[in-house]
Image 1 (cartoon, rainbow, N blue to C red):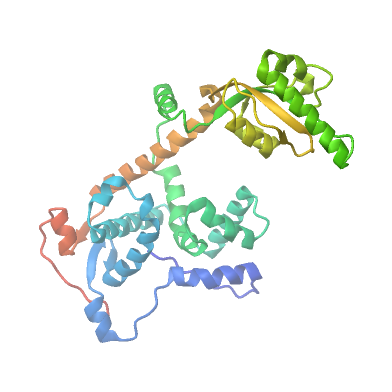
Image 2 (cartoon, rainbow, N blue to C red):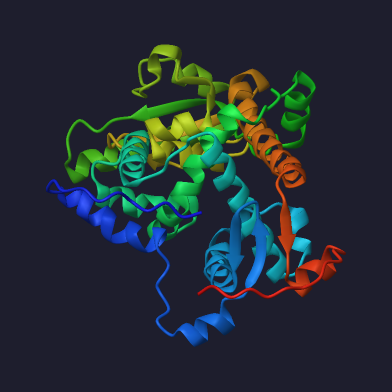
Length: 353
């Protein structure tokens, strides 16, 4: 069910005008001026409650479904594309019906507010930046994302008032962690030795490079020297207060501090000494990798809970939709859909005048 934006008499801002230009096609399908052609092409595919799904609705829905089909339940993808689209339209009709019952309204003002909220959440400074970020975050173009936004708003509100989602259990959290250790990242324990040039002259750069190269040669022969040198006055590492030690630092946190150091650290094997590298402060450095481990459960527990809850939330919503199909009267007239679902009904064809 499409909701038409209310016209306003006051002057609109540039932001509002921009959204209106995009939103109008979302809420209104183009009119077919050829009545005879419309009569033959716009037969009824299904009726959901009081909502009719026509062939034109199907064609528009098919284009939209192509964009978001990657988010469809795996079980649905076993059907033909036509049946998938019809189920997609039936689900959305149910959401429209229940949203109407719950007085959930989605108009231009509500969409503006949602976009502004999303912009704030993603730290976008203006609409143009937000438009560029949407494809990176959702895998959808901004126009496709905007076309789907009214449904997402209704779905989110229905999730709050109509759908109950169970919290992940401790066993589910531990099981997910055990199966996905390689996905949660890892922590590093290493020591760094750094020597800083006193000036930017070629002679000074050469002197410092020779010094760090000599140190590397020594510790390659006797790795036990690394800790001694790292704890001594020659070490000018940013970690010299802890004897050059970085103790179980998450790789992603290390990257925030220094992309160069993070890249070198993740490429250095345990009990090995890195090649010479220069950090962002122009210091010449080497590191000794003492250990690497998967990020501990307690460090990622909240993130795992969020992942599991989102999965449960989506499954709960799909279960709710399946239940609503038993409550809402649905009649389908498409022979392909009815055959795949073993539905035996008299096929009828309606025309929309």
